[in-house]
Image (cartoon, rainbow, N blue to C red; front, top):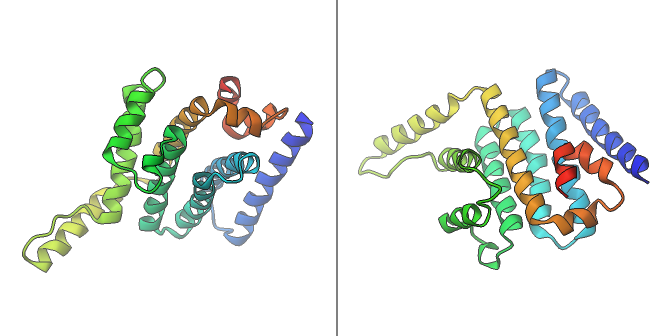
Length: 218
């Protein structure tokens, strides 16, 4: 069962990357390996959703990750950050499991995230979550303040976006990969029973999708 589940996972991931490569043949190896990691994230949450089909936040994360890949390919930066923000927010919903945050993630959500995970979330990791969330929000909203003149509004918006756009693609990829690792750790440690049930007798698949350290955690 373990080896069959692992084989299915590898076949699913390779099939998706082959399909993406076929539709976008100009992609370099760096991009394809990046999408391979994201594809593993998608498949991980599909396992969660199969075991817990009414987990709405997991459905949204799966959709967000698919769109995240497409936005990166098409260089639709604003939509990419929109999906990144949604990914962070829905991870937080799954980690905190608080009905108060079903519809809206607030500043209190991040305070709760930090306070409830003090033993497993260090300051550097928390800072990375906050930094990526602030960047995504700034890009989506333009990072500008309304003034009396439309020209000033436009210039402030343009300058805000330009500052964010100075991130190199390699830097952005590294930062988001770090972000996903941190969020995965928090999700698993706050949902051990969910992960165990979703990967029952299939720990090699979990190890393949998220890494050896996460299989050991659960």
